[in-house]
Length: 284
Image (cartoon, rainbow, N blue to C red; front, top):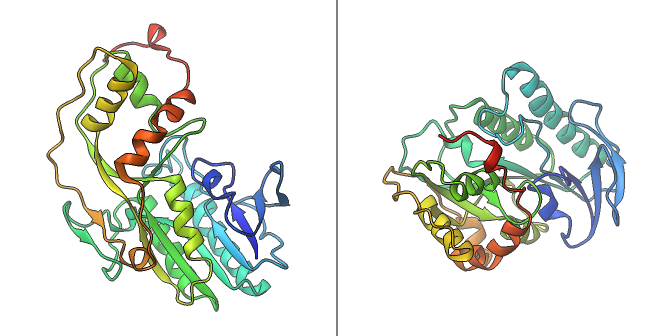
């Protein structure tokens, strides 16, 4: 199987480079060990001749932000991400691509009350521009004459440069105040496993991809255990959280790694953290 992958150099796409088959990267620059075809979100559609399956994980956004990733340019955000995704899906259909796996987001539900159980049958109600963009791209994909799967994923973590908790870990180790918070998290390797299970899917539609509800208290307690940091973790959060019901993947035997996987990979995540710059940063 020949798989075209967008976003291969990003924080999420890098976990998808080892999908079973021949992975062809679509992007600005090639990666060692992979065939490459030039493409950008804001440019013309790529050459998808001979591609069996497309995995679309690319996103143009303000660094470090997904919700709010439009910064001060909402029009440019939509032009790149929504229009670019539409061109990509149209090109896939025209080239005879059999399946498309689109990395959507739990944000398509961010207009619903906190604490809602988010099933795959529930009608999305996005509030943020990010969620609205993902939902509009989902709808366009659903109209294509191919098998289109929208993977509504939660926050992705895992080792690698620029991991999602760099700033949080630096603030905690420097003794700066940490607000209580909890959220749903998923290891990038578990996302890749979910994609691998869907390579031969015969039915399109939404697929929910999420693992654990993680409190900053528990995450930073693990960091404290590994580093001996003297600062106490923040109190546990008490706000209600909407969680994804991952029925389709569970029916395929998908079981994410939970806290066991987090504990196993936390040393590697720490090893890729940016240098502590606490001496030159203001507190508070």
